[in-house]
Length: 121
Image 1 (spheres, one colour):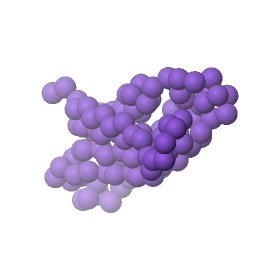
Image 2 (cartoon, one colour; image 1 turned 90 degrees about the vertical axis):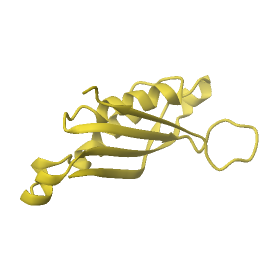
Image 3 (tube, one colour; image 1 turned 120 degrees about the vertical axis):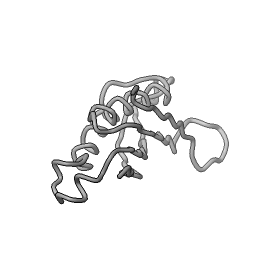
Image 4 (tube, helix red, strand yellow; image 1 turned 135 degrees about the vertical axis):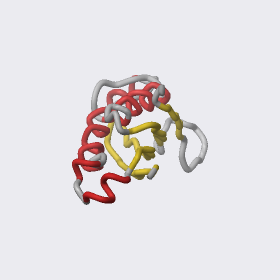
């Protein structure tokens, strides 16, 4: 039973960006993740050990967001994908990193980068 676990709107303050002031002041980043995996066993056993524990996943993702700074959202999304695919049961993951306070000199609602990676079979 292929299924999907989705975690949206995970927010943490990070110090990522190209500009010095972004690294010094920090800003909020928002992450959405989608994990594709077989959920049949978890559906039958009703045991969290048989699925991805989304609370633990969220903590690991926040660790990346609040951790070592990177310049680009693309690199940050790649690091977050590594976390999502650390569980061998996940066959594919998609990560969107939003930077709603990006230093853009025009009115805008959001800027985001999305990466998707499938596990080699």
